[in-house]
Image (tube, rainbow, N blue to C red; front, top):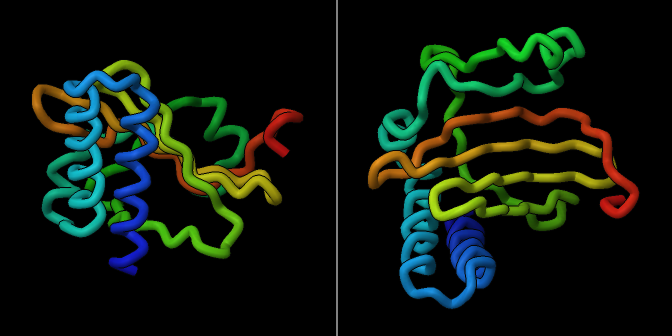
Length: 146
């Protein structure tokens, strides 16, 4: 599992660095995110300190009323620790979309079953934080994603 996490972090650094030109300061920013991402999944105290509770998002298998209300929040006392993902051979793919220098959207997608986990990370001050988490939910896939 640690070997897979290391490979994911290395891949994350390469993908994020290539997604943001060759500006050394941007590569440093995303290297900083990769270090944060790795520690976030291995250090429970660090993880809890880097989540903005109550956290916006959706529970796993959210019903239409929960989705429509937009009022669901994750609370510290109900949080289940996130660990690294072993994507090998299970049909899931992981996508990172940097938006500016201080916001990253992560999606873990199973295209065959139209399932997605979504997390938003934002840099607040000098530190990254999880600011949104949607558990595994069925999503509509556009024609080019299937």
